[in-house]
Amino acid sequence: MTTLTDIPDLGPDLHAATGLPTRVSLPDTVSQTMTMAWRAMLKMRRNFEQFFDVTIQPLLFTAMFAYIFGGAISGSVTDYLPILITGMIAQTVLTACVATGVQLREDMDKGVFDRFRVLPISRIAPLAGPMVADTLRYAIASTLTFATGIVMGYRPGGGVPGVFAAIVLAIIAGWSLAWVFTWFGTVGKSAQVVQGYSLMVMFPLTFLSNAFVPAETLPDWLQTFVKLNPVSHVVSAVRSLANDGQFTSEVGWSLLACAIVIAIFAPLSVRSFKRKV
Image (cartoon, rainbow, N blue to C red):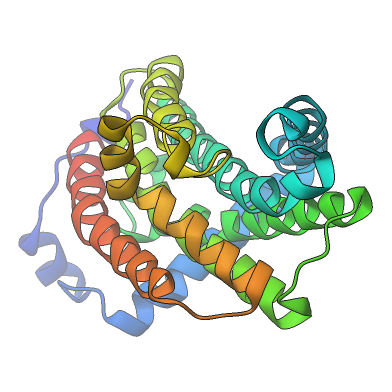
């Protein structure tokens, strides 16, 4: 039986014979990416359990962390909420990013991307499309986390504009960090392996940061790592936007870190993806 992977890649000769362009233009790449994003959103609508980690988890973890650690860290739950809510944004978005790589690996194992190989589409579109769709999941997770905090007594000093800016920044950070887990999805041998890799990265990035405790309370050697951790910059930027309504330098550092992550892991993901399919 002949499969798609058995069909030889004729490269430029095929394009010459069919009259198709040898390179996909930028507008076509954007259009194809959005088509793949729409496909991913339809898949989410039919499999609503994909939203559990961005709907149930924010409610559960926010309440649990607040009532367990609030008194020990800040003296009361109310005083801890300005620290916790903004930190939970980072953890929730990162957790949602992990699912991006795992689902990519599952689709590759099922042969879904073999069908795209014979199509004249951009090689980055099948990767970037689902990630664009995942921005909806990041938005839901961030909004529900803020809503849970407000119900518990959190009052963001930045008001609606500050909270909105914080959510936008969280979505940008989530989309950029998702490229790391997308790369894991292309190099991992199975979905279970990808999940293991991703969790080993996610937990240090979130818990060894200023997400849940002030960095000043940590040992000196750990403070150095926390200050270099890009998640710490994102958390600080989200706090300045939501709690104070201020665009501090942390916002700029966060966007710079996001750009660096994309510049490194997007090409790695595409290159690894092309080798696998």
